[in-house]
Length: 383
Image (cartoon, rainbow, N blue to C red):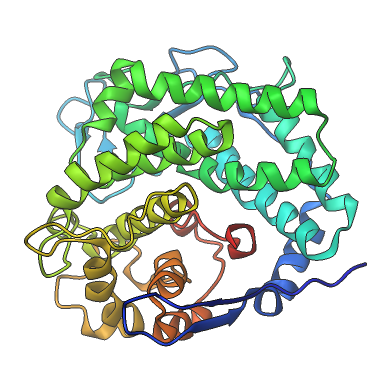
């Protein structure tokens, strides 16, 4: 097997910073290969494997239920009530778990192939892609019409589109799997066609438009997803539209001049939500930079930008004890992880201190809530 080293060094031109360096392959090789070896024994699982009687969709339709919605104690059979930040453990989560599993396993297998050129990893990753996006018997329909339903209130909502943040790193892995020769040209075209159809649904359906126009992390994640999927399908017009949305709406509405995120701080899990939204913001910047849009250096006239957002949160990632807002109502102790905002931001801004903190943080978790909200796990695929 060929051992490959990916040594990254960047110099943020004109920013007065020294080069930031990190050997990603050396850091991640053991972890990636250990995970990928386990995943070789796990067959693909798609939404057709399980169906909720509460779903209004068919066997190929993704279905999930809103996390923070609970039965009304005064009317147990009636419409559910919202309890922000408190997850109802009785909700149907099978499809979401299958999607998270895809997002963990396929990118890890792609990263393992990139590090070793061992075809076993690429072939198994390709099996996942065929099952989810190609094979008629198992593929998922390219929409989230029935995501985050609420008992007695809605069969599906725009907010459910956030569930497919887990396809962002899968989309990043697909060209690597194709490069390995594990997908035929026809299969790659079918996978790309699936993502093109899903992106079109996101951009034109009532649920998609509702999510696009959300003012908090939901709007950020919609834009990040569209940019990621458009990169896979070669839709440069949509990437440009996402970059423009970032400049004109997302940054002005979501980042304060001091770099804080007021809409996320106001939630019952402010620390986790600030981390999560920053992951989406910086991933969008990373995608934009590869496609000719420098979002890293964008700044409004009153000083709002991603640079300020990363700088603001960095001390609280390095030392959570400094966090000056209330702790999250759930899972506060599980954060931070190896936040991609520090990896991408460290390289973009030439900040070695970001990379030094990043490399010391946990790279994986067995806690479902963390897996769900930590969606960039394979830096080897992004370099």
